[in-house]
Image (cartoon, rainbow, N blue to C red; front, side):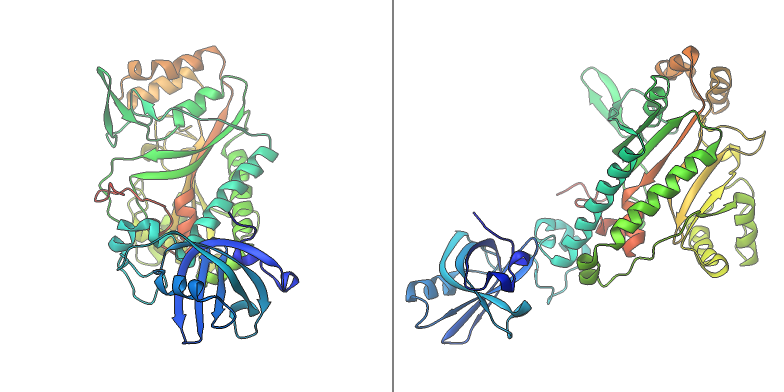
Length: 433
């Protein structure tokens, strides 16, 4: 139905006939001249119809078309320094494909602001705004670069089940579902399946996946359905091998996003590219830095939201970095499969970015005796993990991995709320659209 997008129309096409499709973004009637701004995925272009040069029937069609209607325009490209981008289309034919009702549920031009609920309730129209669409173009580029990079490094893409029989990581934050005559759950993560893959010989795997967490949060950085790049790799020396893959992956993703000049210009955002290696500090050092700012956290406890934000500020101030690893967390606070470093410390890490955790990972336990002992220590029933434990009894190499939150990385890149960077966010209040 089209020969070009609006952004493809250049001065090289002067006097050529083109076919465009899109939405009516704006209309103006100056009497003898009628203007129509067509919007498509790539931008805007002005359509100019003049009395005497355009037949009366087409002028009547322009008058009758409502804003946000879908149209097809066949016309000739003309240079016009007064038009946006110095170009316009003189129409020879305008076809109304589908008309839009009026009034609109929200203003696509952005002249009339709308609150978050109104925008999310009408997400299909909210996404027509170039500013909002730019967020998701960058999101697509981030995910594509992650896949490309991991493929280049020999990782094999997998797809784990999202309907599971028991908790992936223990705990109670699960969404139960009816699975025929049994109870099942939506997967918290692909963790156990990733580890099982390490026993198959396919020793470097990843997936772009979805987590379901039944947590009653109501913050700018939490959702109940989230996207992530999840990775596992075998034959590692320790967690440092995993961290090196993660830091290179994140730097590649951020670098790719920083090249989205058009989208970043529309969003009025700038992205700083991190340098390798990413700064590492231990959990103990993080607590010391926070204590210097009068933020005291008891050893063994997680760093709370306030502490994470403050630590991000301290790392920027002291080390001139927006991104950093926190390593050697207390073993007590980590899941059962995390490899101990000693009786109190684990071989685990988090990746913080501008004061928000965007990734968490560790070396995993590969010894079946120790793994079962840790399951018992966490008051979990080993019988519920039999399918998982079985693969450890028949030759499991040392391995580790991480989960990298796509939503969180993007929200921190663009300094937005997590609901801004997810097409149709799911939280404790929102189940539609």
